[in-house]
Image (cartoon, rainbow, N blue to C red):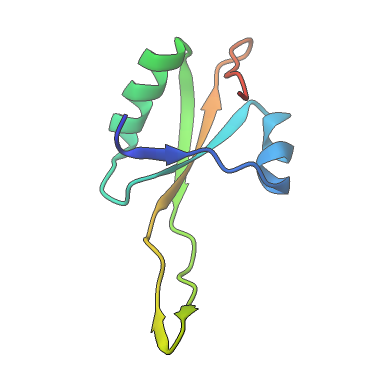
Length: 88
């Protein structure tokens, strides 16, 4: 559970909900099997498929210092027909 950071709620994430696909931002070192086990155990649902990608880095400026925010991996999880995860 420590590796799952949060669930982004953007336009694409909301659009994917219609297809039973849920979006999670996870630690870069988390694997698909770890995330699948955690989601199936915590939410009591059946995961049918998973896709993952790393969004591109973006520069952040803090005064005169330019750096990058913490990296993460985005997982898109597809659930079995009839299963759902509450949004709250």
